[in-house]
Amino acid sequence: MAFIGRDDQLRRLGTLLERVRTSQDRKPGKALLIRGRRRVGKSRLVEEFVERCGVPHVFYAAAGRPLAEELRSFCDEVAASDLPDAEMFRDVRPDSWDAALRLLAQALPESGSVVVLDELPYLAARDDGFEGTLQRAFDRHLSTHRLLLVGIGSDLAMMEALNDYGRPFHQRATEMVVPPLSPAEVGAMLELGAADAFDAYLITGGLPLICEEWSSGLSMWEYLDRALNDPTSALLVSAERALAAEFPTEAQARAVLGAIGSGERTFTTIGRQAGGLPHGSLHRSMNVLTHKRVVEADQPLSTRPGGKDKRYRVADPYLRFWLSFVGPRITEIERGRGDRALARVRTSWTSWRGRAIEPVLREALDRLAPPIAVAASGAPGVVGGYWTRTNDPEIDIVVADRAPIAQEIVAVGSIKWLETAPFDGSDFAELVIHRTQLPGASPETPLVVLSRSGCVVGGVTHLGPEDLIAAYS
Image (tube, rainbow, N blue to C red; front, side, top):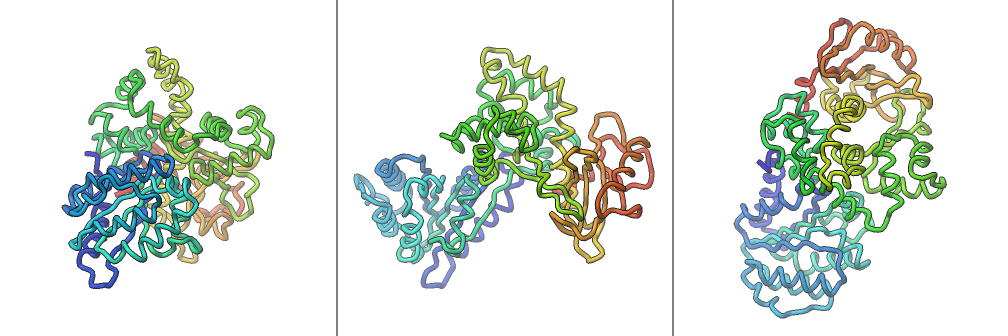
C-alpha cells in the first residue's frame, strides 16, 4: 500500500543499478541525487529498493551532528552492513570524510553494491568542504567499483545546487525527484471516488505516512474525527517535525509562514499578520521560504506585466491544512478537545477548500491543457489565474501560450467546487464579464469550467472531478 505510485521510481533505480553491474567502463560507478519534500517517502522508497535489489548495501542517515559523531555513526553503519569487507570498519575512527570514504572504497565488492547517504544536506551544511571531498572520493576511488551511490535530501534548493555548474559534483550525478502521491494515487490508496480523492489530497498532501493511517473506505469526516483526537497521529505530528527540521532557528520565517497559512496572500497583509514586521525583515523571511520551496509566489497571467501583484501560498496542501486548522489548535487537541478542532474544520471547510483546491485543479488542467485549447503557435499552453490589486476581477483560470507575460490568451475559466451547487447561469454571466476584463482576451476566447457538481449551461467546456483526476493517470 505504501508504494502505490512508486513503480516508476523503483524501476528507474533498478535500471541504474543494472547499468552499474553490467558496465564495461573503467569506472562503472554511478551517483544519483534524490530530492523531494520532507516526509514524502524518499528514504522509505530507497529502503524498499535496497531490500529488493539483493546486493550488499549501506544505508547511512546523517543527523546534523558534529563531524566526529557523524563519522562514528557512519563507521558503525558500515560495520553492521552486509558489505563483504565491512569488518574493517569495526573500531576504526577516521578523522575526516576523505579518510572514511577512501576506506569505504576498500570494502566494496566487485559484483555490485549500493551506498546511501540520507539527509545529504546536513553533511554539506556542517562541512564547507564536504562537496569537494565527496567529488574527489567518487572520482578517484568509489566510481572505480560497481557502486550505485545514492544521496537523499529534503532541502530542495540545496539538492538541486549540488549538481549545478561550478559546484564540485557537477555532472557526476543523475537526479530524481520523488513527488507526493497524486490525487489519483491517493484516491486509489484510500478507495475514494474522484471528488473525495481531491478532498483527501488537500488534507494529506499525498504524504504516504498520513495516507497509511487513513483506513481505506473511511470518509473524510470519519478520518478527521479519529486523527484530531489522537495527539500522536501523523496528521498532527508530521508538519511540526518537518518545520523543526527545516527552520530550527528561524522563528521569524515560521511566523511569516503561519501568516500565509492563515490565509493572507499579499506582502503587506502577511507582514501585518506576522506581527508588523519591517519590510526588510519580511523580505528576508519570504526569501527563505520561497528558496526552500515551502511557499510559492504566483503572478497574474495575462498579456500585461503583473509581477508587482504577486500572491503567496503554502506550496504543500497538507501543510496548508495543518497551518489553518491543526497547528493553532495543538494545545487544545493535546488536552483531549479534538472535537473543537474538528468543529472548526466543519465550519470553514467549504470556503477553505474553495481557495485551497485552485492550484491543485490548475495543475490538473495543465496536464490536460493540449486537449482543452491550443495556442495559434501550436504551444500546448500554460495554466494560471488573473487578479488585480483590488481583486476586481479575480479570475480562477487563464490558459495562455506562455507565462508570466502571454502573447495569446487561449482560454478563460472558472472553478466552482461546491457539494451540490452546479455551475449555473449567474456563474456564466460573471465569467463572461471577467473575460472582458482580462488583458488579451476577446469575446471569442473559449470558456472552461471546473465544477464539482456539474454544469447546467452551454457555451463552455466543462470538466468535473472524474475528468480532472484522469489527468494523473
